[in-house]
Length: 143
Image (cartoon, rainbow, N blue to C red; front, side, top):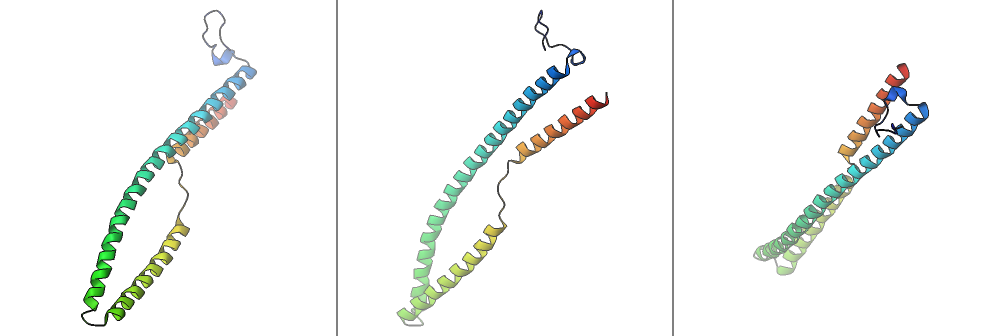
């Protein structure tokens, strides 16, 4: 594999098939480890951004909930000018449940359309590596 006197690798043409196979195996193992490390780093970065985004959406949802509560109270008070208080509260409550049902149905259909997250850069890199190895093997076998 290496020239014993100076520690440099011998030219490929001088190496035996066993040495080339061993070298290819080592390089392939390193390549797979590096691609897995890249995929792990990419998913970690995406997860971090998703967590921050979820926290911010949670905060926004909390304040929106308080705003909706105030709006509901305001609408009941406004309808009390026209109807009795119990009827105004009942109409607003039924309206809220209808809206909640429609949102739940739309949300369920969106969950069904969701696809799992994939590390796109790692997948593209791995495909390019496989293509390069195939090309090198083909050239080697033709030579």
